[in-house]
Length: 234
Image 1: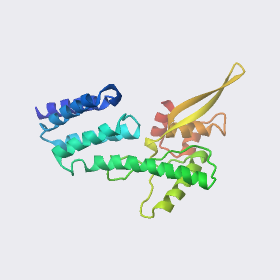
Image 2 (image 1 turned 30 degrees about the vertical axis):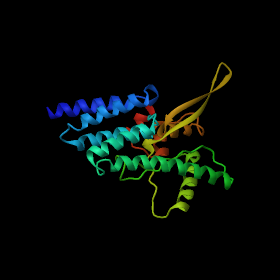
Image 3 (image 1 turned 45 degrees about the vertical axis):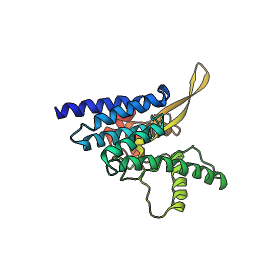
Image 4 (image 1 turned 180 degrees about the vertical axis):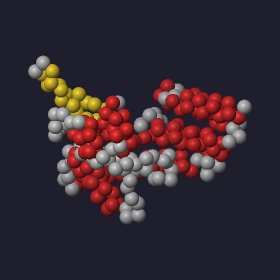
């Protein structure tokens, strides 16, 4: 019975979380959140829900799938009343990180402008506090020079702001828009390709060569063969 409730509640909470705030009035949205929290009160092991909710919240925030920060904060506040401040500590930290990341991004843009720096690529960075977020795997990906220039510029800027925090890049959470130029029937067309960071690194290698073997790509990027195979085929 307990397992059933956890499965049902996880499914129900996920479905409610997908509702866009624009589709509901403030009163209707508040009513939906209240119903979810009411169900939460019946759970015997609330830690299972906390882990699930934390992962789903992280996904919504990092992939920009949350249509309302106010709704997210309202839900967290309701859970805090039911479960206590320790229960929502990480969730509140995640929301704070996203707000601070916007401030850091604005400051970085000003820094680039003031220093008259020229970057080959636009860069948006989300700075996350390790303890708040789910654990994400990092790797030793060799970035192409276009990306490396941006990252080194941001790191130099960030190091000026703080000396007690170290940046660890999590490429698996990144995405990129790559402009592809394709020629067909003598006509050249440009298309914006929305891809993962890994896929962008693979595509950018072909700025230097018309063809490349799998081993060549692996050597350039320094990724395990099984992982690279997944990115090449996706």
